[in-house]
Image (cartoon, rainbow, N blue to C red; front, side, top):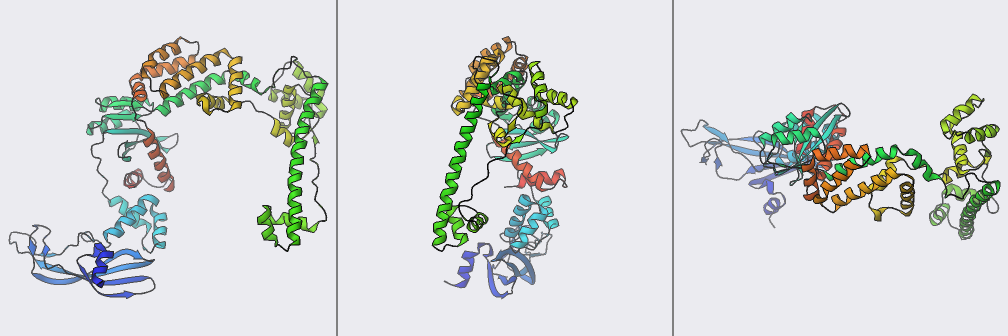
Length: 546
């Protein structure tokens, strides 16, 4: 194949140019090219001319080859314009597929640098570009972002609206996303209803608008896009329901605290025999675990002796046995199997106050902080953390102090579930709950009447959302308003106020998921700018990012 034909196939953007010669150095490849077209078109009147006036050299930077920078040294011609009415008598021929007018870089290199600038910013983009053989600076990359034309908004039909924080807790903006094209189309500098309404009035093509539960966005959409159907995001609706459940459970913390107690045995306090049985069960389980660990270590030690006798290196034995090099070196130095010392059990620093703690517990003081304050008044000067193992033993009906294994206590103690944790269990599907979560949930429903009512309402609401049954919403709102739970009253009032958007959320397939993903991408770009750039630069990077 002829070299010219090969060059045109490999480098289609150099079509219409002829290679005269090339110069190769350690870092730069220079190609001397000449235009081959016989005529050129005037940029003003579009008339073609074949009369050559003169020549001049044009130097362009192209994409690198194998890490080397590429420079195109092109001989370009000037032509006479044959149109007497045209104001331009002499014009230079243009290379629209290769470079923009008056450009110093090819379109391919300009596009690559712009992509690096939008994705990484100025400083990080310049570092990566230099590693690829593109010599540029951070200021150049930022100028490319500032001068790049923004993509057209078009005529979006489904619009996603959400807020994002410029300075968390202080300044917030709004992002608008074309849900069908899956790209952001505008960034607004605040999250007020007036700003959103003004943008929507200028773009009357919006038919569906997805949003969160924000009243400002609801008002702005009602004022600026009356023809659009507002859709509340289902995730935010269920998240608001989770906050309601969490508030209800927060009022019933005593019931949650009861979930850590063992099953009732018929007496409120354990006898000495019960304590001995409990200690024996814990000891037997721990001893069984210790025996299993010792058997595993003994098996590895015996295999080590076999490999050592076969002449294996330490590194090879470490890879084969799955233990560290340091452990193998220590086992090779000693004679016989290295037995581990039994775990040291320390006496609680509150042991001198055991009788006083038992007395205060029997008097009805069941709060750990209050017990700690009382024992400090008696002269205790140790750490506050020592009261929690004592409190756990008292709740179990055991003696308050004694020789305890703190690490074993941390493994065996069962913390009461927090309201947030229990709310997440409630919102989960029944098939996704573990057996332990089912048991804890059943105990909670038996302890609290309010919990049973709230759980029933929660299950019904989740079912109508998941099964897409908007016809069941009115009945649910009436039942929620008829309960004695003020949290569900306010939640039902909010749903009634935004009922049209809630019904659309249940019945239509639209959601704000794509918008939330674009907000995550916006956060990544914002944090990569270290908080020093302007809003306009962030806006351009978000809208130009691919």
